[in-house]
Length: 468
Image (cartoon, rainbow, N blue to C red; front, side, top):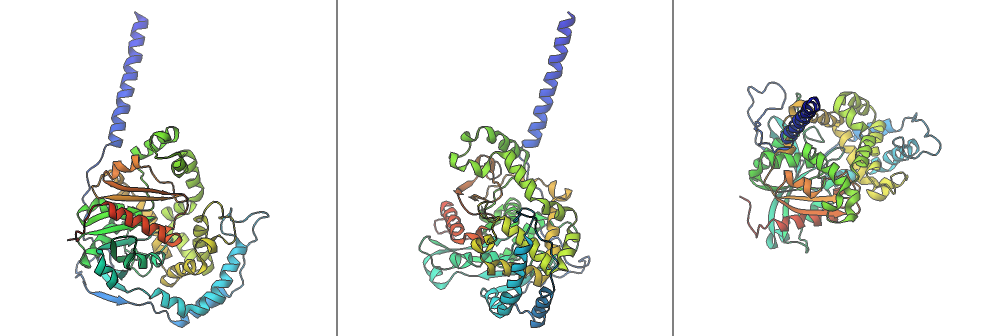
């Protein structure tokens, strides 16, 4: 009898444990309803009580005083007091100081000497500013060419960059999207904004400006320009912002395409662990295993390369002050990210950045941060997105009906599988794997990204419908 009682207690405890575990699992993995957030929060200076929106759209043209360029040249001309790398070390400890010396020399002696040419390049697309929610927002607005508009269906497209990128990433893909291409029936009116706190866009004046708030500003920018429905394409933060926009304002989004398909919901994490051991059940081919698995190796890689994330998410103003006061330090910090985001075969090579991206594009992007003094406000975005105010929204657990397309480049951050992605985007229309390419796809492989995006558009089934 005693044994039976003990056995009964064990069964009861085990049953309670299983039942509680099931309840916890169900609670953590169930879909959540869309949260309600304000679509007109004021983020400008002051309290905004007397704020009257200025709806004008003003032309913008980059014009940097020559004195500012000369001042930068003088700063770069100072003797560098860098520490030699360890014997046998290339870029394993960060950006190599010998490589940095070469970059600084080129920046000072070659790049700045032809600044007028680079400035004209920056101005090759039509650019504007307008005030949204108290913030002056800079954006490229390039309409479809007359030839393309006469032959093709034209749709609005919101292009979103991330960190440490800028609108400069899109200078090669924009002409593909707006001109008459033979490979697709579509052309686009491209709107490529500098994110709030990045480049020539204002920064928020108080805490709380996270990816959901950024999505709201970007959506309101498109409405300001007369686009009630539009496509979204984004990578890095642009992918997160685009996902948030599609989730919070699905009525405004024709389709959302990402080249960084990540999810951090509990269900996605659990499915990722399952996939490590049963990958053949959830990926279309064994050739794509390394895009996702083994998940423990992917986490280890992220931990190794995410030191910057922790700094920016906890003490952004400290690192911002160091980088703002030293153009060489700013260069080392940003160039290291581009070096890392080449590919494993070359990322320890001195010529990796030149080979994969080219010198001018990377230095153009660096100049955006230097000229606008925006590194501090840009990295603050990390702190806002690990705050309780943002994480409590749990937007990765909110399904959205918006058509979604995913392109996975081999050496980008580990993406989720379609099995995981459909929990968030049940209307997944397009999924593609590339066995090359990395994080800055628009800069590294614009033609490939363009073809993948237009393939996604073709699968939505618009049949020539015009956005309302």
